[in-house]
Image (cartoon, rainbow over all chains, first blue to last red; front, side):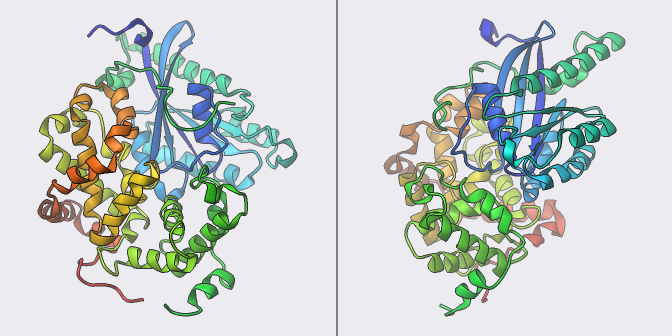
Length: 215
Length: 255
């Protein structure tokens, strides 16, 4: 079962991308995993999946990210993907107040279906649309503090803060996991074993995926 | 059919889904020449049909995925005809009603995935076992059913599948799905998780050649098992499955 060096990792963290339809979840994912942004992207039907391996706090972490369809009707399928997720990126669109107002509903959704200690990060996406901004940074910041979430604003289009958002949530997960494994004296924390069946071979995110030109 | 009804739905009624539909219009076949132009005729027709349907059937309303079905049909007929064809498909004028694919809880998607999962294990035990350890069919097959292969398959293949779909109903989706897995079987059984999930969402070009894929699909018999698995699913899930609005195949609903 020798893995090639580029596929070796210390930790496998499962993260879900959630939030209203059209806030840019799929493009945040493609920006993070392939450094691509697709202007002509299709709405996500069901779930999408991608991974990236990166250094977090000096460890090699493989982030396994599930991108879900945002429309409420799809929660019948997508909520199953919250199980075993160590992190959730809850995305809204800074130009669409309703997508921010719905954040509380998404939090409830996580409380109902996800593990209790899931790390949640609130992301205000599309900051490139400066003239259309309708959700103030301070409002979202305040909300995030009240709810105990980390918070960041991003632009998947301009590749601003996307890396940082993922780095932050993965570091946070790492800190929790490593604390846990210290106290429980176990070599690998139980929560990571979620990924145990997913012993991964060829993990290169294949570049031949359709989509469109990188920008 | 029903003169004036479509026009009434498009022009005079309002739908709670209007914003949802607008948001998705430019995200439906975004690179197809007919739908590419912002507010062009393609996008306008697509909006009208989806809006009309969401008013016509407020329980279904608008669900992502319907746009791909409507969009594909719009390439071949007028928007009014597309609307009535959607009505016929969802309400089950000829075949089993499709509306359960889109109703709250997506009951028919869940049933079809259950049936498909069982069929995979019966037809390809080795692959079934391999998949079962890590892959759930909702990870790759929900869009096959929700959009009848129009979401991510090349048009020339989707159209051939649609010809059969209109003629004999949902069975062909199962058959084509099984044929795809069969065609790639020897690779799939070897792949670990990530490669597997990628392969199941991006079939190679040669697998998607309709002239080889469809004959293969036709040769797979599923009707009897589908019936049995449906009963099994309903038993397992009690009456909740009924909410899917599935009637007996033979009873067309009139509207």
